Image (cartoon, rainbow, N blue to C red; front, side, top):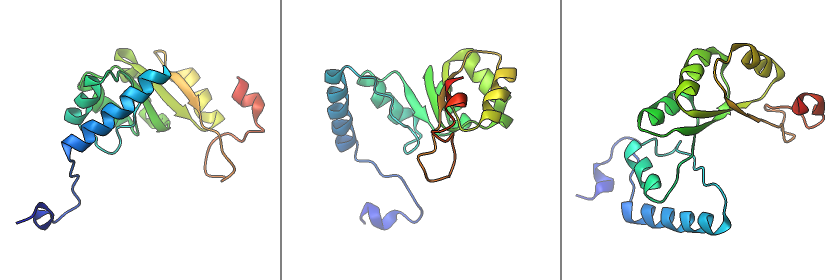
Length: 149
């Protein structure tokens, strides 16, 4: 029976050889360009696969939630960016993470920035989400007074 015939529910199937070859190729390109490689782990969400990245020198990662950041911090990653806009209701978890790793978050409103200024207990790097014209979320490019501060 073929693997595709055994699978009944959505399942991540990875050809390790192909994945590692792609990863090695990307890591080589990044190394030659002298840039930081901060891959997003939202698809594989796997500590085991994360180790493949470590093997090629990756030290900084991106995730899409606080809980995913906690999972990877528990797996030894110590420089994590949460790419989804910051949820202020998770401030306790954000502070706990920031106490033990280098943490970056994304902010998409002035209210979030002000809340973080008052409630962060440890340094957290901040990326500002800019609305590119779709009106979904983020600061409008014309709100330069907020972006500067």
